[in-house]
Length: 291
Image: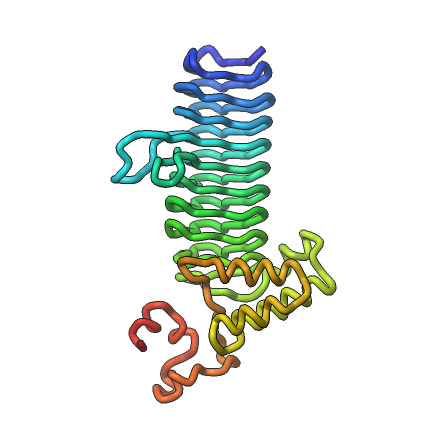
């Protein structure tokens, strides 16, 4: 039998598994479904067409299932689907989908959403990812599995973040982040492969060397994009091809490699002299100015 604190408010339309625990002053409104073994902490708020999987832990003041923060949303299909074993910490928010985005926000299994993190309408989050404090997704973002978003990361709408990538703290993400990579910066820049994350995932030896070569061909080499993609796809390794396929499929464009003083200065910058560093020239604002 569910253990519901006498001060909690649970809608008669809600469906709670027998061993769900609901803490003081929590509110479960509407046809919410909560899976077995889940815990809903004090003052948490779940609403709407929301399904929460098994063994989830929703901490105080978290909010799940409220309408999209979208000026164009006028009602219609709006759902949240959350898998098993997720941890949703204090003041984290997960908003429902909209008809424009398929009507559903989805979260997989075993994710951690830390204090104040936000998943906006129509986002899709994979498995085993971590959103650090106040990391935020705008609408329609796709997050792969085993992703780490550090504190105060902000991801622009419609971006994709590939699996096993890591985004450093206080980073603004406005382009797609390829899988297996490490990015950071006021506007996200590729720093290289996420070597620690890859090794923790058991990726090493020939596969890691193949990924390093694919990264070099795709992001460090010059030349037309199609030629770089073709070269990377000739590497006989599935993860190297996955990296190339992600770049090829990007509609927004992908983050570029962070330039360093040891990198070659692009030809178009030579005439500007040493006053322009490669790091500045690669910044989106500077790049637009130089066009």
